[in-house]
Length: 334
Ligand code: AMP
Ligand code: TRP
Image (cartoon, rainbow, N blue to C red; front, top):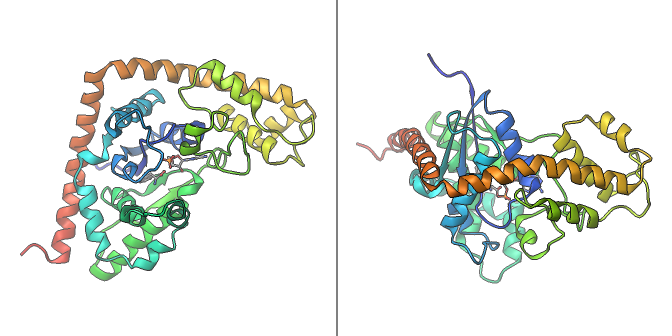
């Protein structure tokens, strides 16, 4: 019997501090859809080599295992989804190289993420420029139809689609065109200390009030919410809410699953303190089981190895078939 489920592919870099935006924008949608899709979820450790926000006290390998444990702790079931480390499947950088021979430089120099990251440093690594090509290879190796990500990844999925389209029109159909899957709520959570900027893993490392980590303890969660920047008033005005209150309401909706109307009715006219208390309670309840499962899994080294080995085997099998097909099409074989 052929598998009619949509193929879903996504990944998170093992860098910085994984936060509630990563959860609502990526991990939760992966888990919610896992019975309906054929999900492949990668820890993109090769991408993390470009990150300026690597945890200084940990190796990328250590952080990768932690992120894999977090995938499981958030509810990904390795029997239903494939979970693996990018660096353990060499077809990824291999196909990326092949794409680099086809992708016009101008497509990469105009990417917003490249422009902003290149501005932050004097010595720009080449891989910062080719980052979206490796991401395209990640996705296109597996014929993924959907890519569940947060809002900030939209441009990266579009370029993956453009790369597939260009390759298909030059050489004949080889790749499935992927679609970004971006949720209505939770796909762009803003910083708690500065609600006009996106919550980011790197700022979270230097600024304690910036984000809530998925594995933060209840005290840290409550403290960060209590200190979160609000609007200038004292009570919630849903219609005219500014960035701070909009963000808190949005986080509340993403975690409670309530509709806009329900969340509005619950908080409209109430003091900011009420919203903050209920939000802190909701987050503590939602994150406590993830935190304890995460700690349990980190101690289960052999189990985690088994999950990653199984994931690696499937990813390797699927992706080498695709690479063989690409080499054939390009005329590198016979
Ligand atoms: P990254 O932190 O760049 O490795 O992102 C991992 C996943 O989390 C991607 O799908 C991002 O789009 C998503 N993500 C990152 N930051 C946020 C945020 N502030 N709100 C919602 N989703 C986010
Ligand atoms: N660039 C993505 C991010 O920073 C991570 C990523 C790498 C990814 N490869 C991917 C996401 C493939 C989705 C699909 O969030």
